[in-house]
Length: 403
Image 1 (cartoon, rainbow, N blue to C red):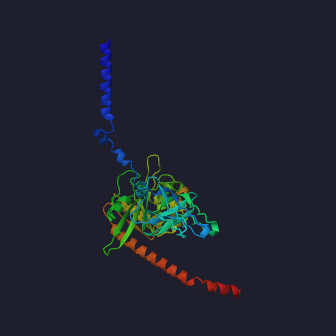
Image 2 (tube, helix red, strand yellow):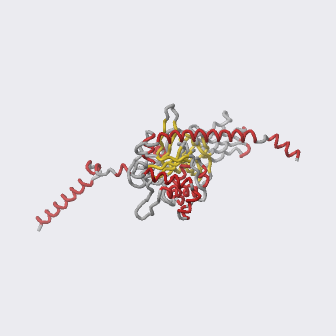
Image 3 (cartoon, helix red, strand yellow):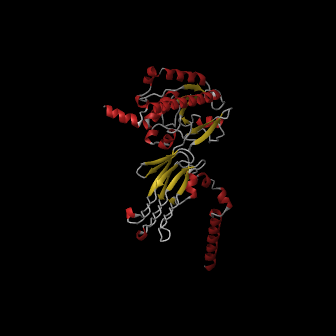
């Protein structure tokens, strides 16, 4: 009986050896079969929580009236090219502490101030406390926001005891800054358009949610003018309720100067369980989603691009959509009440394009530039008018005396 038992044990050992060889983490073959490991790495973050603490103030010296140094501040500083992903991977603990103020000493009565802790953040970050209070915004390189202040150094007013620095969690919320924001449902052709007018290389495929993270491209003109365009993850019905990409998409269009609505001339249907929407209905739905998220987005300058007119019957369908939009008051009753917006977007222009073939894309680029320049000039004029018309403090003082 001993011999058969030995054979069984040997067989089990061989089987276990084969199992280890096949599924060992060090096996090159297994590593080759795990491409998902690389794909699942998230390289884009638009929100990050970090802990910040200002430095404590140094101790004073009551006997000689010595003053301790102030603790350093934690400062968020805008830097071109920085990302929240890089910040998170460079500082895995996500904790930033400023330097402590120096103590007052007998032969050095004024303590040194603690060093500030500067944290490089991407341009477009809003710094918020945990309760949602905005501490400041970083809208250009070099701009700073104090996230946590250091404690005061010990002096006569605080019994020469150095104060503690602020310590709390802050949220770095990224809202992309771009000249133009592309607005559209999945598969409208936004990624194709961005790839054709810039060097951006967004992923393109014929299934919903091709774009799963924002892409920024730059349109360059013959005279060197550069206009940035943000291709944002596709909306779906109910995005204002945070369905789909929801608020992760919608918050990024808040800082764009012009909205470029893009719709498929053939309409849109997310899946077999969803209702098919015509191009006209799609325009109204996009309008409504923006309005329900933030009503003031509807007042932004806007251009409509009816895409894929190179398809069969595309030109005729696009002309019909344009006719419906231009006679909106008479035609809005054609759609069900739940998708009708309260306030309708007023498009500065409407284009029939093909992002795939490039038809009319060049004309639209020229128009977008012209509109951005026009609205920028209007904004400067209104700003100057406001400055000139605003009464000075002296004028206000005189007015109260006269009354």
